Image 1: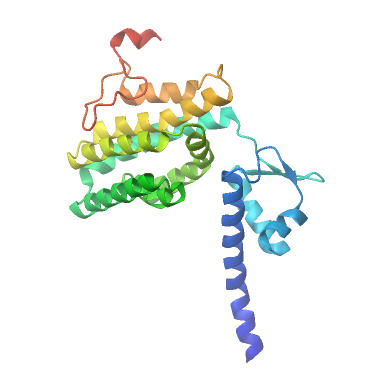
Image 2: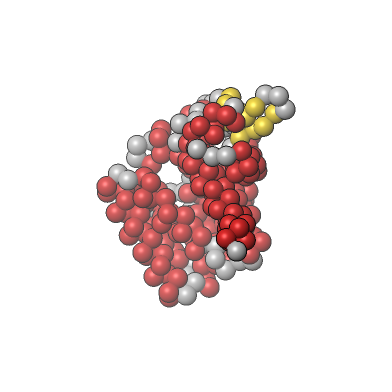
Length: 266
């Protein structure tokens, strides 16, 4: 009887172990405890996490799917470097598809969902005041989830994957720009104001500019001559070929890349 109970509980415990090991390693990669480009053995990773071989292997498989580690035969594990081409692809996709999802979702938001958006803004603001970047993460993630909550499950799943892949870029932005959380708060409030107005077009344009800013800043810090052509073109597509001025719902911020029709040939 006892052996059956143990046998039934073992897979669940293993599943819990995988989730914990994945979360621990992911956190170490995102905060650069495990720095980009570092080669590390599974033995050392096991020591760092206290994980057995099976949950560690599964956690590494998940991290590899997220583009955070690379595994090579006879070479062990390498913490993936931040590839600028990958960054440009990820953010171009997010700017394009997430903006579409926001444009669809915002006019359909319920009063309850708008109230929850308000709450996420309050929680993010409190975290910013305390300088607690970890506490900022959960309401920030929920804010973006709510803004795409009325599109298909498959679209939301893909958006979630790319948001996860973009996490390291956002962390680098926060490390490199001490004013980044304040800027993010201002941009979030503008998006929220457009959402309350049920203006999907304005909200989508503001969201696209908000996302593109992260890509532009981090790429410029890592390689000043790198051209984020995909993200830049995606942003112009969302804002319009003439790069139209976005309505100022909040503090009047001009979106990244906004200007006049003279920029059409740029």
